[in-house]
Image (cartoon, rainbow, N blue to C red; front, side, top):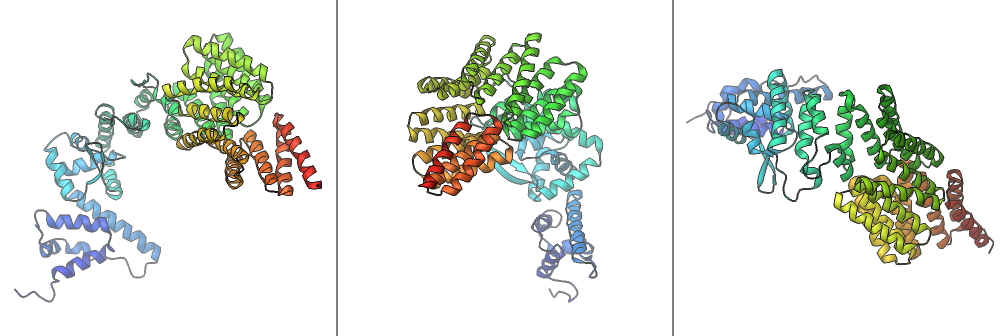
Length: 549
């Protein structure tokens, strides 16, 4: 059959469609699937006759590049919206309702999101039209998603009907809470994915009561609230996200959220931000007369100032916390305060006093069954005894700490215990074993975003590599450590890194550079009032001799 010169052939039609959408792959895929499906059944000419007007518009030739780009993006979105609007009703409802999902979900989630009609037919239609795509597999379960552009357009269509949008968010939350099944060997975070997704869905519709209930939900695996379990696992970013969303929305949750935001920032090395959150928690607690919350804020302020190297200020906050906890009969708070005092006195070189406080902390933790506190106290005692030269005793304490941390899933505690073991074996001259422990500590710290732990592990590894005379690696580790500890304001770690760098350059015969680092280390150690000052003075004296010789 002869074709009129005014009617384009199939190839010309496809070229025009492609040019109109500038070869946009998603739009062309959607159009291709429309042509394949009923009523066109692959008849390109018939499709063109039906929708020719759609392809006749174009951006004005006078428009600038930015304007043409904006008009093109709008044209693409309009084309996707048209494809959605042309769907059978049940398929359109399913696509829009499922746009509330922020990650790939199993097919059964899709099928449950539409209340009436044949859900399977609707889902199959979406797949045939290229509007739903296979994303990945979780074990034996296939997961499906919408392309980001399709999801964005579908979500806008859904939100036009407020009641439908609200119902979809709530149905999605229900599915995550009741139908989500993590894989048997799933990472920690994936075991609570259902709670986190449901939390987000309830926040979207501003159902803060339901969101708060999830935040405080005790997990059947550990009998710990969700927010605390995230902290123990080292999922600080996730804890920060849910705490920020809830903090100002539910008055009775404000103090807890502020404290969690402070705790996460301490672990991420954002000490000054942590201080801000703890001060907010303190003010909120004082406003409503919550003495327990006020005490927790005092203790955490002590921890933050300790990390900033302000040990006298840390002592003051921990002493206030101890007094208040004892007055309230808060045994766990009393133990935490004693541990904080022990840490501060340790950093000031008062080891016997530190041991006394840590022993009291250990006793209380064991009496009340606080396993995490017990592990922390044991680890702290290990650190002090190592500095007293009692290395075997230190190793014993750190091994006990490591066992507890692994039993309760305390990732940060596990890292600290491994680092403590490294310090003890380093003092015994067993350097290969030392490096192994430090490397494990470093890996965990990097996994959970523990910037303090990462900097500490690098400093310690750099010092041991120096003893092994691996100067290039020691230099690399100490420089990386110095960058981290300066970024986060960890001043004690900065002094250690500076001293290590001085010793590396001394070993390399670069005496002037070594002196510069040693002088910086001495100035900082003097300002902090820490025992490292004496080591820096001795090092500078050596460097002066080296310089003269």
